[in-house]
Image 1 (cartoon, rainbow, N blue to C red):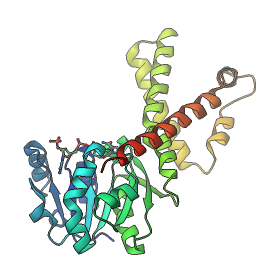
Image 2 (image 1 turned 180 degrees about the vertical axis):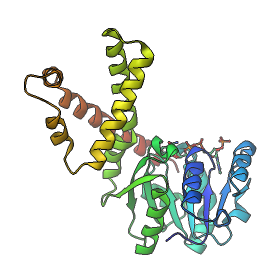
Image 3 (image 1 turned 30 degrees about the vertical axis):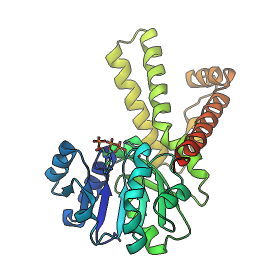
Length: 275
Ligand SMILES: NC(=O)c1ccc[n+]([C@@H]2O[C@H](COP(=O)([O-])OP(=O)(O)OC[C@H]3O[C@@H](n4cnc5c(N)ncnc54)[C@H](OP(=O)(O)O)[C@@H]3O)[C@@H](O)[C@H]2O)c1
C-alpha cells in the first residue's frame, strides 16, 4: 500500500537502506526519487536504478510522500525549502530525523502538514531495524499505512499514540544497539580474562547474542521465562545472575535509559528552538 511517488530528501545511509528494502519488497525504482547535493551519494543511488537529483524541483513534481532523511541539524533549512510545495500539494511528510518534533517541523513547513515522525535505529542498515512511529492529527489512515509500509521495509515498525513516547523509543531501541554492543564488549573482555583468545570470545559472544534474540523473537515465552528456563538451581547461570543482581543490574539499565530519555528531550528542545 505504498504511494505512487516517493521523494527522499537526503540520500545517505538511512535513505539508501529504505530504498534497498523497498526495492527488495517489489516497489519499482521508477516510483522513487532522491534529492542529494552530494555527487557520490547520487551515484550510489543511480547504481540502484533510482533517479537522483541535485536540486528539489524535478524530484518533487507529483510526489505524494516526502521522506526527510537529512541530519537533524539540516532539518529546519530543508523544511523551509519545502514549505511552498507542502502547503500547495499537501503531501505526507515522513521524518526519520532523531529529535525533531512534529510541531517544529510543521512550523518550518509553513503551517499545517500531515507528518509522521519516526525513530529508526542503526540495524535498519542491515534490514533488522526497530522503528517507533508517531502520526500527527492531520495524517489519514491511508497515509499511516503508507508510512508503515515504508518503515517496515527495514524491519519492525510500532506506532506510539503520544509523541512524548518517541523520546522513550529513542532511549530504548534508538540507542539500544549500543547497549547490546557494550554488553558484548564486556562479555568479550571477561571471556579473555577467563583464558579465551579474543577471536573465540568474540565469536561466542556475538553468536550468543544472535541466538538469544532469535529465541526471544520465536518463542511464546517472555524473556523472563526464557531466563528462568536456562537458570538451573545452584547452577552456573544462577551464580552469574545473582552477581548481576548484587550490582543492581536492573537499576543500572533503568538509570541509563532515563539519562538517554532526558537527553532526547533536551536535544529536541534545542533543535526545535531554530526559527
Ligand atoms: N543512519 C542510521 O542508522 C539512523 C538511525 C536513526 C535515525 N537516523 C536519522 O536519519 C537521518 C539521516 O541519517 P543518515 O545516517 O542517512 O545521514 P547521512 O548518511 O549523512 O545522509 C544525509 C544526506 O543528506 C544530504 N543532504 C545534506 N543537505 C541536504 C539538503 N539540503 N537536501 C538534500 N540532501 C541533503 C547529505 O549530503 P552531505 O553529506 O553533502 O551533507 C547526506 O548525503 C538523520 O536525521 C538521522 O537522525 C539515522
